[in-house]
Length: 243
Ligand SMILES: Nc1ncnc2c1ncn2[C@@H]1O[C@H](COP(=O)(O)OP(=O)(O)OP(=O)(O)O)[C@@H](O)[C@H]1O
Ligand SMILES: [Mg+2]
Image (cartoon, rainbow, N blue to C red; front, side, top):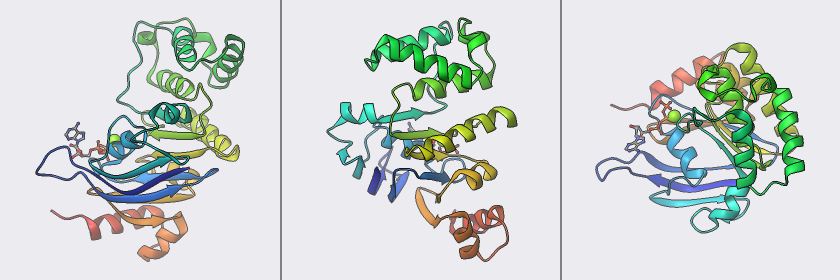
């Protein structure tokens, strides 16, 4: 569903931020990107979401090429990132309407989807409040609901549980597991080990723009010859970080 082949990205002439990344995410799979601040996770996810072009290499979504089939790809992906801010003066209801129209979702269907996702995330009582009056967690849940408004087969979530309390975080991780069961292909980044351990079928550890280890939790623990996933991450990081 998502396929990267030797993807490179340089923001400047002097420095390469992504240094040749390849991986594949299939339907019904959750793929996790783990790595320290500045490793290049957001950069990679922005390229997969077509917000930014790679300097070289190939990105395909469901067989479509990210350098030419942009419109078709947009209908297939749901993208969540902390960098995209909700209009502070708008309301959850207005935002949902706006994005539903953008995706040509018929009114009836839009209402049904809105009611289901607002009820599921406890957004309903806040549906007509201004975004600026809402808590971080509520804003994040609204962003998630909106990013999935068109029921995309491919889900790209950059730190979806960032800043959430454990209850809200669980709502989000449970939802992701449900979407995985339904066959969506999901890629997410996180700094929270328990989230990666609970959700991911496959994890890539990204250090300085390169995947330095990849596998499921058990495989990574075995590769690193340690007892816990957290220990595996630290060991792999220390062995691969230069500077
Ligand atoms: N627009 C930009 N222009 C120049 N450099 C950038 C730009 N965006 C990111 N970078 C640099 O690219 C590198 C990777 O950043 P990126 O945001 O992808 O990392 P990340 O893994 O998402 O980190 P974090 O865990 O902090 O979110 C960093 O060194 C960052 O400073
Ligand atoms: Mg980031």
